[in-house]
Length: 275
Picture 1 (cartoon, one colour):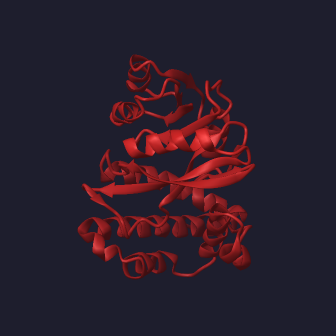
Picture 2 (cartoon, rainbow, N blue to C red):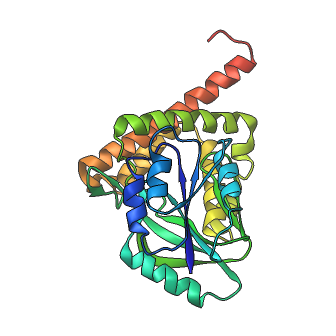
Picture 3 (tube, rainbow, N blue to C red):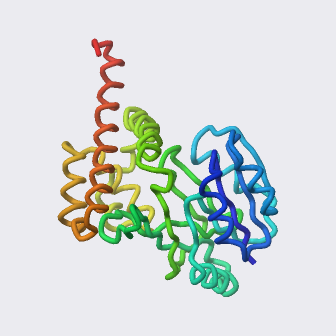
């Protein structure tokens, strides 16, 4: 009833756990960006279909993956460090069986974990669009991609466990160093702030439409790293998540700082100023 799509690149550590969490599925696809570890071997051993493609952007990679010959009409899209709970898996299958033709996607509540702690207050966005009807979703934005759905969107109550730091803090920092460069380039191109509409941010038709506008507005604010730290720690109450919440918020604020200084560096290079 539901196919599973897992996007990978050197995921030999996390992939076995992810595959085990979707053992109920009879159509699992691995879409790999030319891994150099045992990712493909592990996928094949679990009976998953394996396809490879050279990575050229997150949105492009997801759009290409959605062209695979899935057995079922609905696809659950996962990263290797995510695990749907048994409750979510059962709910998803019931939801797609009863979904009317106008409903083409479902949002899922994701729970991020750090050092064994659920970041209940620190996590900014708990809802992720991951269960989609084939042919009705298109991804835009090459970093922190956005799913655009041709149809209505429903919500599921089950949760998706996200082990964001399973490979350690150093891996997270390395990955977000790359992300921050891509975000800075989008900011410098003007693309990141194109949809900075306060009206859309407050009254957008969909959750994701609001988030895109809110993020665009956020990029126009001065002192973004400090604002984000204070908002997450005080307004969202990340202090209640203890040491894990403090670490998570500080890391994400540092990520915003990297974007800001890399953006400034790009502008200085364009102006041919000395670095």
